[in-house]
Image 1 (cartoon, helix red, strand yellow):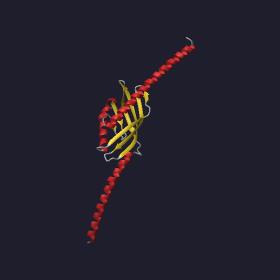
Image 2 (tube, rainbow, N blue to C red):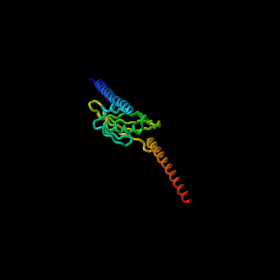
Image 3 (cartoon, one colour):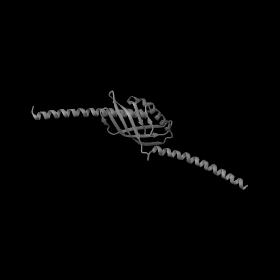
Length: 195
């Protein structure tokens, strides 16, 4: 076999191998993108059991509120609490906008943004964005979440802004009532002294 023929054969083998590796990697990215859709459905419908098969047995997460959960039951408790705060008839909707995942054999690191919207029972709409990272481990041919974390900008956080407005209303209304009572008492005291 001539030197040129050997170079062509080696080049073809390398090209075929590289093509197969790229196809395998793309299949892994497709599998991770399918998990995105399943997660969005589970969160938006409030049925976290839909995502349970994709959580590793030692799963944990730190959520945008800085709450840490260490299993599915704690995650369900977190979302139950959030839905109670939203109020009856209120809604939550979220979509993930992932960047391309990074693959390291049987470990994958996914990250991106979540665009979230809350409509409270009083009809108020709050939109916000979180940034998230999720670490997956491949177990028995299936990607499973080991750890997830989400963060929000603490300085322009619309949830904190809304809570501050509600606190101002409560304390402002309370201050008004106390002021009126104090004024009434002072007036009554002055009248009784002048008589």
